[in-house]
Length: 113
Ligand SMILES: [Cu+2]
Image (cartoon, rainbow, N blue to C red; front, top):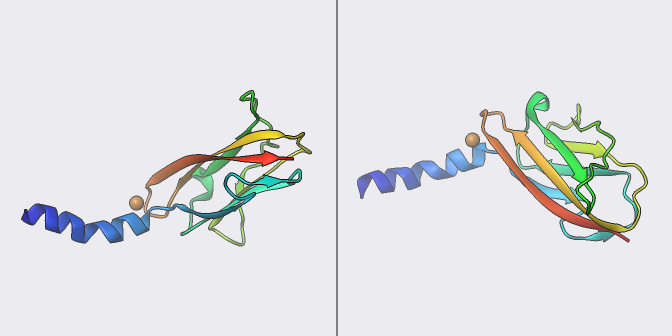
């Protein structure tokens, strides 16, 4: 029981040290006109060398420009350029390493109308 209480007490600091998405453009699950890029803002700084994002179409073909990068002026912003996308459903896959060295990853869809 004591170990459990200690684990709970330690958890907030540990969780906050990881990087999780705060918001994105396009927004998760939203329908947009062909976007020029996908941008994801995290709740903390991420490591440029180990953080990446890619975009796939409904046929699982990669459609982004291959220039995924962390904004040099904002270490919480991960972005990748897009060509003009035809209407359809797309999926964004992101993987980042926070300043504490821990990796988080995830995926979300958006639609182009
Ligand atoms: Cu961590």
